[in-house]
Length: 328
Image 1 (cartoon, rainbow, N blue to C red):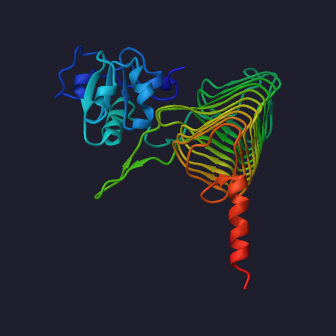
Image 2: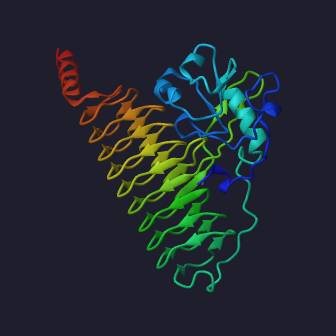
Image 3: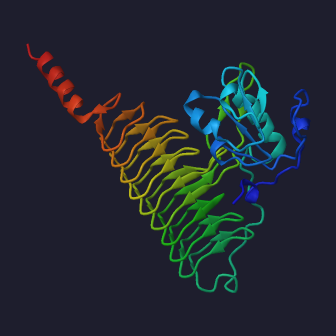
């Protein structure tokens, strides 16, 4: 599903955005996507050496990048060389998706009709936007808002005071009270005079059999999507930032925070109040102790703890050293 399922898109030719570039072909931009997901007539971006492998294989027609990184891209890709990739990307997004830099209220909201949702049970004061689809035997709690184009699978349970926008839910998903799903993420380009808001054109995808407890917030993706894998359980007051990918069968305790674009593997367990920095890769079967601060990638099957998080074995060693050091 394209990002513009949720956002109005302007049809603009590439040379209207970058008039000083001599493009091989002056095409209408189909979409703006990450390197890995880009196809012909898409615009992409490449701003970090962490993504060299994806850059080498991208199918995009044009890429915003830097002089230092340009040679990693295929010869078929038009290189748009700039000093600040994210700044130019934000400006391009604003031209193509003019409404994606702020969450405008959904003015199409209405009370659901029994005719349209005859197998769905609703509490009081529920509001539904245009083209919302809700699967059979789902239950929607009181005072919940489901904005336009959202899709909810069968046998889902949505609590009270929940807001869902820019989101696709699978079957048997549980969202407990006061969850906020699909809002714009915290994205800015820092500038001296005025910080530039970064538009968010992605969505949130929550797969089958996921349970999300009370008060959780999940931001939609900026360029990519934010996604929760099947059979994952998320405790109260967890924050998941834009573009985060959480694998299947994960267990995440309360008040954990994920910064943007981090990828979490399958069967990962994370203790309460841990923090995971952005753009990291956490492997499969990893266990992270409560209160840890994760600032580096973590390989499969590791157990880590502390700040900065280290292997559990090293954490115990450090604790013993500290304990002995305090003996007088």
